[in-house]
Length: 322
Image 1: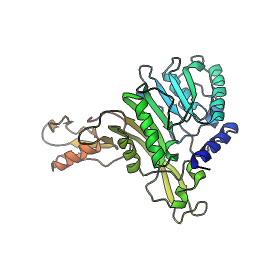
Image 2 (image 1 turned 45 degrees about the vertical axis):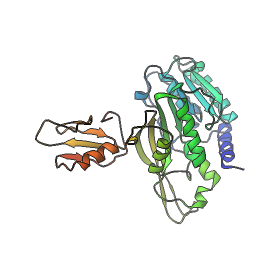
Image 3 (image 1 turned 180 degrees about the vertical axis):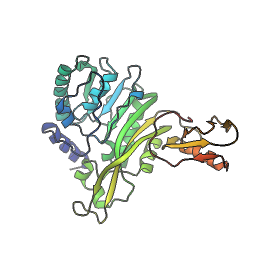
């Protein structure tokens, strides 16, 4: 049995018998005006963060969500895209699709604004999405792509890139790990399916996104997730796993490489009212400007003693130099 088949079996079981907290911590249940989320959706919430951000969801966007779970994030997305077929949910597990459809019946009864046809559920594979080219404004996945090995991950990202419109966003939440994992952990099919042993480092994760062609990367959150300890897992050392929330934007790839935002800021504190580097970066006196890592390095290379560059916080909330 392949690790992908193991994954299908894990989530088939989770669809038939909701497993609260399976694989991941519970995503935020947004308290939005008029939005009521059925309890069963919360119990079947198999994600490690959130991919729902209001700033991404303007002007009734077309949204794609891969790996439907119990439908909670699909319902949250539909809140911002109240149109027939505004949200497409894709899953390879029949039982999960059936459970989600049932959950949407309950959501329709609880929410006067919601209609079931706002969400179009489709049987499909992340490696071969049943979606047209350049038809999606916001694509999302929560704690799914970390399960894939390198070849499948590259294909899944290629598919997401294909279906997005120019400047569309791929919003993701996945576990990451900065420590080395041994081969026994990496090759344990169930631990991979449980969103543990497939975790990449942030550098590897971002490289996979830029290799797929995404020209702008925003790391929006980084937080503690799990530990793998020697008493319960095949490891000699304690392994710390974090989760990150990332947006990859289908911008053209700049000639000098991608713009990667990791929460750095530049602050000018010189004698003038502002500093202009002549390359589109304007720093007002003593006002922080969010900068991508590339711009931070260029400003630091100027060797000035009146510009402060902060370290990466791995939290980026929009705005800035690019």
